[in-house]
Length: 192
Image 1 (cartoon, one colour):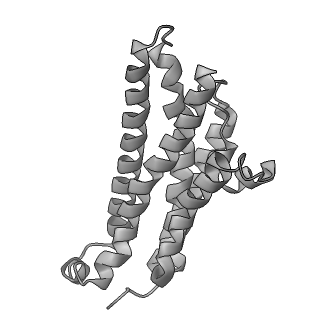
Image 2: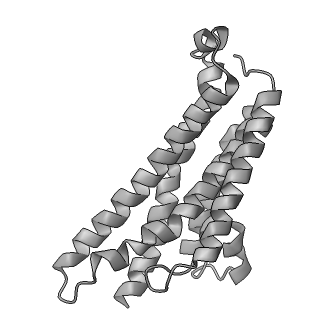
């Protein structure tokens, strides 16, 4: 029962960890609109470096938030009467990191494809909370969880990590980031 609760909290931490990643990546277009990147665009800084910088910082922010939340949960559980091994709880980090990476990939595509409507990227964590956390209460069908990257992950740490699925999710995130960059490179700059 404790591991079932830890699995639910792990999903919520992963969804929460996607928030700083999304916010960081969306700054690329909002910084362009505010004119803060005009000096950078006037220099010989390529769009790849600019896009890559925001993507890397967003990825680091998301993964650090996920690690901090998971490690905090693992340390906090050590005071329980029947404490679990920290490494077992830390499986949640390795299990949900690919889902956070897929969210980053989706946001990268949104940045390149729909720069003026980039705020729709916030649908990802909102829908994830509705379908995964509240889906049981609202009698959502099981397939609705699969519409979010977090719904593809096992109930880690209750169950083992599916490494083959994690690999596919990481590969999908890389493809999405590359597609997002190619769309970003071809579009006009966003101006106020």
